[in-house]
Image 1 (spheres, rainbow, N blue to C red):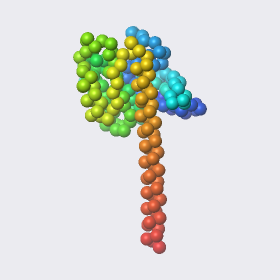
Image 2: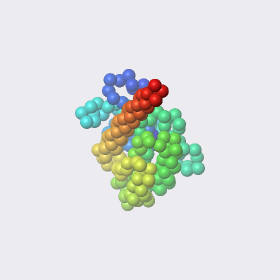
Image 3: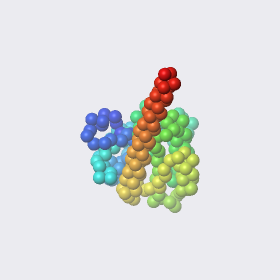
Image 4: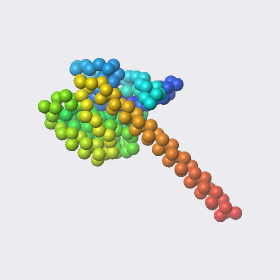
Length: 202
């Protein structure tokens, strides 16, 4: 599943963030604070206002399904990648195939948008007796692709899910600051170069 904040929310007075997300259970948990064990296979965009660091932030979440078939084309579309400010990829610790799908999705994302903030989430921590993906595997995947990593249980607690979203918001905010700083430095360099070449021409 992918979470994304819709560009139309620019009309809000609140800051907004576009997120792509890959897991219905965590989406529902974040949006409603409730855990639902069964949900329909429906792609949707939903919003939620959350207070972070004393400031109201509007999350718009593009919650879309992903294929369990690693042979198929990655389900993260170019449109979604261009729309998203950040992405959450979720797999089940009880299903190694879901982990393989997330790894494939991540490779596709990094090819298309190398610097977009991504958080990898291992879900169903409460079912540790049925674990087929170790936490070390999740950590190594996240480290290899410069992602953050969380292991949570959407069924057990809302707080762990909330931390994931707050953390991704912080990553997005840092990314925006870095982009602005980089753009400012490039502007200074261009201005200095223009002055330098003007003097040489004189």
